[in-house]
Amino acid sequence: GAVVSQHPSRVICKSGTSVKIECRSLDFQATTMFWYRQFPKQSLMLMATSNEGSKATYEQGVEKDKFLINHASLTLSTLTVTSAHPEDSSFYICSAQRRGSTGELFFGEGSRLTVL
Amino acid sequence: KQEVTQIPAALSVPEGENLVLNCSFTDSAIYNLQWFRQDPGKGLTSLLLIQSSQREQTSGRLNASLDKSSGRSTLYIAASQPGDSATYLCAVYSGGGSEKLVFGKGTKLTVNP
Figure 1 (tube, one colour):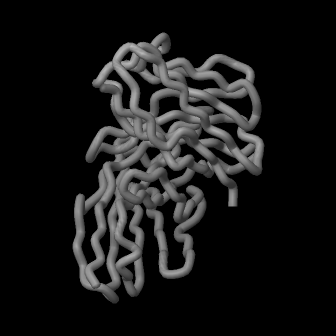
Figure 2: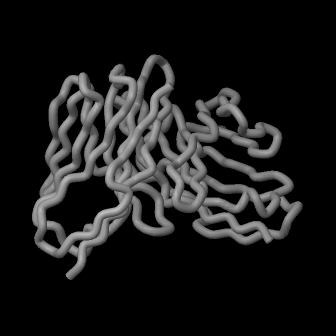
């Protein structure tokens, strides 16, 4: 099966600092990657869609200057939370769609961000 | 706007029972529907993917059905085991050039030994 690796799995940072989360498709090329966040006892909420080589498309209410997404290659997308605040503490999950697939998505293990 | 609802929110059963998880969606114009499993603090594991043209998919003890016209899907788990304890999420993909998945809030399943 297709494997998506997310790193780091847990990160604690001070308020005001920036944190970068990586999402890699290990054994396939991902034309599109998605970033979600999940608050406790809530469903996953799509933050943004990133296509390789182009700018990410952000969902309504998601600050593009705060959540920087880069999809530099067909196997790597990064999410940078800039000037993090405690309310940014959440579980961030990425997913990737394999090139030529029928819509099935493969998910990373998620990254738990805690902002002190 | 597509909305996905999962009932029940939580379910506790003794080991060995067969059980059904329900998922409903408001817009029947979907491309596919996926069932996922999420363990605490972990990412998602895709369990079953049903294309809009399909009625059901089976994998081991899992069987998922899709009734697109009524906006419903069920996940049937046979002979449940404690290792099945997790939150089960369903998500629909409406296509149309958008790759967005709309998720339900999940059903938290506990299988007691």
